[in-house]
Length: 385
Figure (tube, one colour):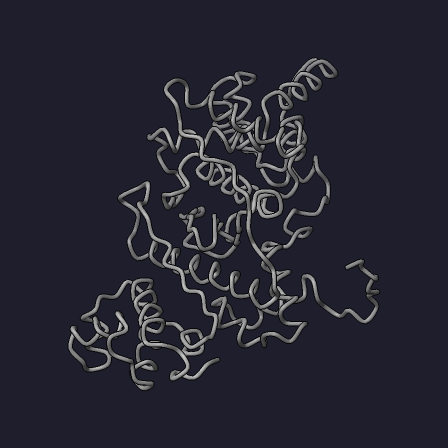
């Protein structure tokens, strides 16, 4: 952490303005907190008047941002803002979600700088939605992207790692308000970012990530907040929804497997549906609705299945004790790698990481342990340089 005198007034002013905006406070709120006039706050944020250390301390507490983050030499503070696709979202909840996304994205950039990692993804160009069938365009885009990534028609086992490793999209999984599935935002300083709700089952998280990928392809300059039970009225939402289904459950592959079941058993049963959903790592509801979309099952099949009482016990009876996806994969694979590497190279402390990420030390320790637990038995290979 640098001293206040080591940071120029313009830089500290910009950081304070960003922190205030992120905290959804106005200049009057800030002025009252440090007992100055609003013009003084304006001058501080413009770098025309250097903030005093006691004022900085008061403002950091008001904005909910640790003082060492404001005084970090290479601090990255983002202000991911944009037009929400829904105008009736809860303002307080959406502000808190964006605050989390800003904090996680900023921390990732800082960790990359500490580790000397150059993050320069080469993104696919945006594909504006054209006149004609939105659903057909979404399906074609999904299959084209699968081909580009070399996926063919195979199931996607870990979409979070795929988005990060192959497409350069930053993905974070954190607890959000229950009715919010996720948020997507784009900023030139950090690129594309997706925040997914950790409270939701992994199948739902996969569908949310694929949905946001659809927005990334067509309208990445807008912030998008997805809510459960959202009415998909606009073409961009319809595209993202259809894309998510086609990307995770490619129609040619699903049709082929469906026909294989029917030809081998002369019928398609609940057991086949459960096995098909498990094969593609999606929920039973998502697979059933995809089969309805492809007109392989009658419309309303999932509602009928619900009415007849499909239970977790019946699913377990067919799948047995297969480990849930949550037990096999870390929720934040790339972030865990950055955190673990920076910590074990002694570039940051556990406490500093907790402050950067807005997590408690238990959560930070879990991230560290994903890639850097007890490494006494590990062997380091000689890597050519």
